[in-house]
Amino acid sequence: MGYKVAVIGATGNVGREILQTLAERNFPVSEVVALASARSVGKEVSFGEDKILKVKDLETYDFKGTDIALSSPGAKVSSIHSPRAAAAGCVVIDNTSHFRMDPNVPLVVPEVNPEAIAEYTKSGIIANPNCSTIQMVVALKPLHTLGKIKRVVVSTYQSVSGAGKEGMDELFEQTRGVFVNDARDPQKFPKPIAFNLIPQIDVFMEDGSTKEEWKMTVETKKILDPNIDVHATCVRVPVFVGHSECVNVEFENPVSVEAATRALSKAPGIIVVDKHEPGGYVTPVECVGEDAVYVSRIRKDPTIANGLSFWCVSDNLRKGAALNAVQIAEVLIKDYLKK
Image: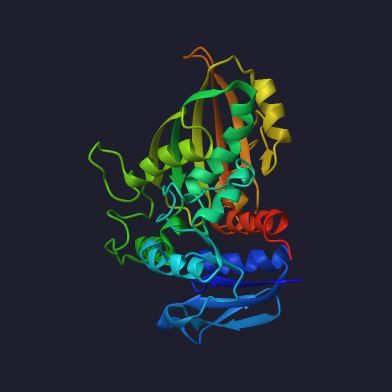
């Protein structure tokens, strides 16, 4: 027996990826409803290879009888409609930042803390973490089990798709402009992104960190362990899809490179590609369309007593958003919403 599923924000990058992921993974649906703002009503989106859905108006949609909503319309919209859907008896898996730190809303990465899904009954909402946090905690989980992590220092290299279609369009137009001598002023980003790096994602906070860096800290503590200290530097790079991270880990106990490599290789959702030769690692271009978090360049940090560093990449629209949400839904129907 199938489930009635609503995809909120179905015309956006993540919404389209959710629809594709549901179809690819043969999620047991009886009906899929595509929802977006009034200006998108009547537009068509694909579900699988041969099914087209007409977009309906989120504002007027009645969620009664809908089992699961996968929501990615932006935090402001979600703050209104996710509680409305939950009040109608629909379990909402929310991709926005609005509910992540709500104590009544579980923040879930299925490879890391699937048991937290049980807490959905408090609010009817389950939060999907930030894309950069997801891929990091997937890689940290087996290492934390191995040696107990004390501190993480991470530098991210995040693609423009994390800023939506506008970010991707801006990179394209600015890159084109360089070659045809038609300079384009930045609109989505604070500085030009083509052939450049921008060490700011989201707004600045009082301590000089950006909100993206704050998210990585507080979300890691909520998902993995409140005792882990995290210091993040988040950078936007001229890559269309795929986030990369250089992660430095300090453990309470000694952990060898060999033991870490074995633990990562056996962990769900991770593929280790780590050859000490030119090209013996994975780059963001290679992870596009892939489900896994790829880990490379695992090495000892000799500057601290129990330190390791590694490089990881992942498709931020898939594991960083759509896939993680669908995986949450799969655990939900397996363990909690059985029909």
